[in-house]
Length: 295
Image 1 (cartoon, rainbow, N blue to C red):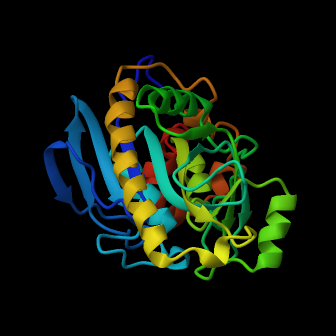
Image 2: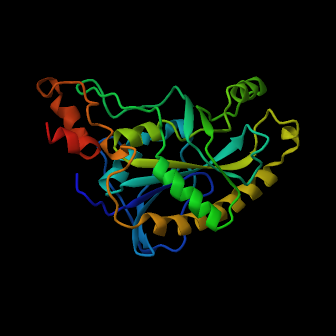
């Protein structure tokens, strides 16, 4: 691994965020993946001279529901595009009375309650186990927090994001259960995205944008669709401002990730080289080429 890395910032936009303002030299480009069809083309460009790559998670026009997203292809094409860090922005409901609509939560933990998604790049023929004890990159979290403060954004550093399968929302009993577990926000998209980013050795951080209180809240039934859409629109504007501030802060050449995100596969692959399936290895060229090519 080189001593100095020139960052390329991947941006994944969730509900309400389908483009990035201020990108220079912008172009949409299709990137092929051996893992199937990604959500959309990638938008390449620069912000203040920093290379950026944007992916609308649900596709332009919000065409793909959470359970049908090809998370593996999405992360794979970001890796193929040269991304070194990924900032994920997603709309969520609040499970915490201290996190009202409009709050941005820089999460540091997940509980994964999804059950209908492909969650790993490593299939029969090449088995690996990466650590998810700390699923989000603290370095990226620090920079996001600093950027949020600079633009006076209502935010919380740290919090547990419960990822549900969807597309239906929770029952009240489920919402109360997740609160009892100590969860702060609930959404449908950051798993297995974060797990796959770790397998791809990408520094990954989540910005969870609160649109409303989940159904545990006594005022939940009084919330109108118009009110939620209004907050979502305002959140998208705030998210674009956050991106405009944080990208230049991440653009300087850096050393290896202090938390080891970019070395997550060191000692993770347990299948000996002689027993690895060549077809599986070929699909892992972008995700795991650093370690597989060294074997």
